[in-house]
Length: 324
Image (cartoon, rainbow, N blue to C red):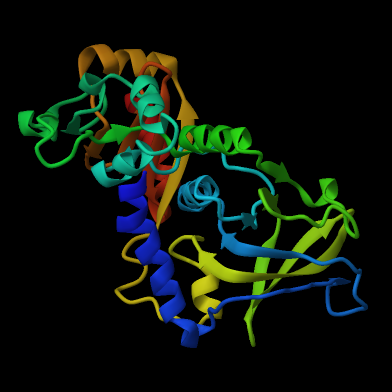
């Protein structure tokens, strides 16, 4: 762990200290109040954490694990009221798996729970799931498993399953997942080791010695606001990051290359059919009536996501259903 800290964690925090001019700095002490949306008197109580992470996706949860294991107190806020049960992302690269090796057996858990390699090593191109196979590509080569470049291979594991494992690791370290209705207003103000669900970041203001983050949440049918002060604020809230927008950091690159609709469904019959006939991770479906990409998250469980261009959604689903 000491080599990991020297190489990755210390330079990371050193870089944060160097960018004080971008509204991030050290905080000696802090306090915050609670008020109704749109203003109001302080609800009392101090809220302060050394590190506040915005976004409880895999990045935010992994970061909170590393910080806690290194003795750095932190809290996480997440605008969603609950964690998604949609599979979302599923492919974990070598570098991520290397980091997971440092997290109490997380990499081993993923390798044990993921589908067998032979069920997801191929991409299949076809006219339909039961029609002509136009071609297939095996993306796993022998050198991928020789551990010359990385000590661990890639993985195929749905994001919601990864989130469950990360939350279990955090619970073992004393973290608690809190909803607005289950969180005290004037009491229970020790926010370290808490994941605050339903809390949206709405403002970021630099202080002389830190950062004040404004959040909003719905409690008992009423919109409230809570200020949290921190030494370091970290945005891990995805490509449409609120933190990035509030900090006026421009997103570079072309936007909206394509808009897709993801349809999550379960079908053990389809899973068994593909598993024994034409296993693969991705199925690119091309025919005159419909175009779509079927992501096989777990063939044995029959868990899939069908991705289609949103303007063709209804027609594509209708046509593809007729081919199943």
